[in-house]
Image (tube, rainbow, N blue to C red; front, side, top):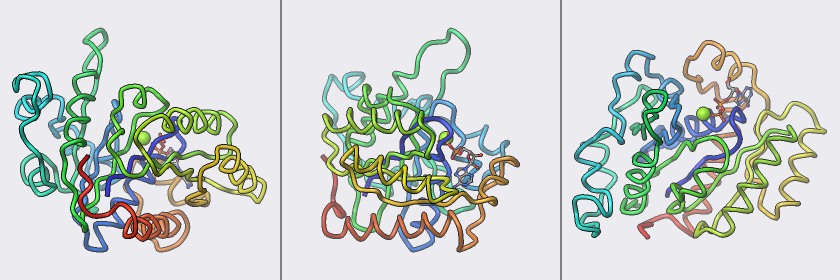
Length: 267
Ligand SMILES: Nc1ncnc2c1ncn2[C@@H]1O[C@H](COP(=O)(O)OP(=O)(O)O)[C@@H](O)[C@H]1O
Ligand SMILES: [Mg+2]
């Protein structure tokens, strides 16, 4: 199953992507967590130190992977498919939390160009990655709506659009959902995060109804998650609060997927 997590900056995408990945790894799945944000920080949430994270070679700098990109060295024809094992053994970094991490890449310096090559390599990998029944790929997407224009996430099974109750977050979530409806993605869900009051819960329920998508979860405001954000540490799975809600979400996505989209999902 391939799941992309998107939404406005700061709504909790990275925390949700990391907790989903950790849960799937702990429950016996092979997991690739992909940091597709051009300011990557998923590594820290998966327990790597800042130093270890800084040594990860981004996909955008990996000559071997760049050669696989459609239209470059292979005369416009993509000749390979990948298995999850290929990617894990050849390109990914194992994290203390369990999942295997790929980092898309970033703009190196001011004026040094854009992230287009990184996005197109990532898109090619996703398109040609054959994901088996017990395997999960989770993408932590860039903030906002730009990646939908680039089509980076068009080959996922599920798009999880994260919003807190904040008006601007909901506006971004609505824009993402509108754009995603025109893509090939069939399963689009709203994930409510950082819920602290019954009013916030109500606002997110209404947001899902207005956008005509299922409400996948209501993740509570969690002081431990906020503290981990402040210190830059990985979130510990305490079995309560936000990690517990995200574990339920993970099981729900997997359960639905058993009927719908688990198994070979190459497109
Ligand atoms: N459910 C939650 N409760 C409390 N704080 C949260 C929750 N989810 C995320 N946060 C905090 O909000 C901040 C932004 O979260 P992050 O996952 O980095 O967002 P994004 O990846 O969307 O930019 C972080 O400091 C994180 O610890
Ligand atoms: Mg993030």
